[in-house]
Image 1: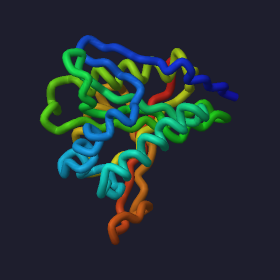
Image 2: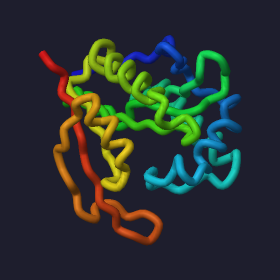
Image 3: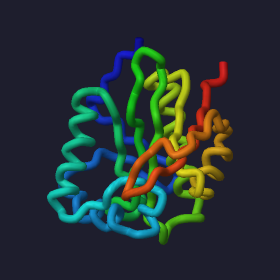
Length: 183
């Protein structure tokens, strides 16, 4: 069974990004990200209504890290401390060495290869440090950009669930992609 310890918090750097711990000081940036219509288009969760909602989100992220049940990074450009996106592992299944990856970024930065940089390093961290055996992603089937990036990193489609998720008065479909650590 996996044993996790996210203390001290693992900061990760890529060529252009710093993946760092999220703090309450990032609340304004997260509010902008989480209320952006395009950024949230395929994140089937309620948008925050206030900075208090973001403070609760930050607390949930930090509690997951403190309790070693999840880990989330704020993504910043090396040239600015402003959070431009988030990435992390949620629903870490200790017994089965599996975790779900989730990510989002400000739409103004899409198409520049930044998310690829972040995902590559987070996958490495998941396999090499956490010692995961597999990583999954739960994707809205209409989210072509997310599916494209998952396929770039050799994630395979495992399942298509018809109307398995209820959000905003509608039943939505889900696709599950996974990547198994190569031996």
